[in-house]
Amino acid sequence: MLKLSIAFIATIFIFSGCTNKNLTIPTHNLDKKEGIYSIKQAKNIDMQELVNEVEHYPIIFVGDHHNTEKTHKFFEDFLKELDKKGYKLNLANEWFTPEHDSLLKDYTDNKFDTNTLKDKREWDKFSKYKWEYVAPLYEAVKQNGGRLYGMNISKEDRTKISLKEFDKMSQEEKNFYNSLDLGVSAHQQLIYPYLEHCDKMPQTSLEPCLDRMYRVQVTWDTYMAQNVAKIAKEVIKTPKDKLLVFAGALHIEQKLGIPLRFSRLNNFPFISISNEKIEKEKDLKIDTNKADFVYIYEVNEEEKK
Image (cartoon, rainbow, N blue to C red):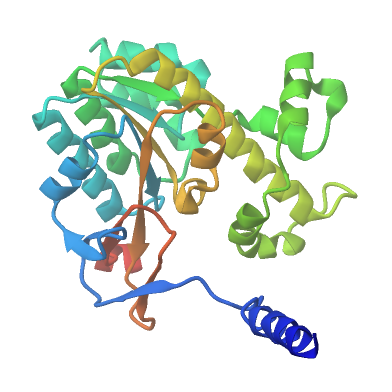
């Protein structure tokens, strides 16, 4: 009996030593070379291999580093290669809301060009990012005969949720607010470090800034996921149909933002692509759960300036 007790205590000691809360996520330590890296294969692949890898996935989430020329050029090339393979392309984009869908349809129906789309979107008033980086993506989908869709929530509706302005919400908006899942700890661990600056921002509410900003992040992810689910049901009809979801990398990475909430709404298989910038002063390390594929790039000299 004594031997059994000692063995039991020893077992507890051994396994408790394995539950170190400070364990870090394993990484792939890579040479600083531009290209496409497959995390699940742990090797560099070319564009054709990437296109082959996504064959059986109707939904492709693509993370974006805003205002970076190379990431947008990579995505443009990816769209064109999918087009060559005979896929019907549909693109849901963070820069538009569902209210813009009729405008986007007129564009893909060839009623006007990308410059007119920019004007009608009031891009220069709406965004500081370069239109010339995103316009070729829309043109690639248009030339494919595909469709563009808006999926983001408006700034006004976001503000209502941030400040808990329930008196300004419709019943539908209140229902959406009540549906937000703010308790995904893995997602919190991913997002919180990027919200540390919020304490330096002007105080607009008695509620802690971190709570409000995290709620807005979850609002973004949930709203876009719901719209992606609606669009997917509409456009995925054959094995040749693809829905590409293009949003900021934090909405995609570790599949905890839009992909997580999307997966709760339907069973469409999906795959994720993110990007990683080569930093001169840092080793190139990629978390094993970052995405299925990662586009690795070095910033242009002009962008550095």
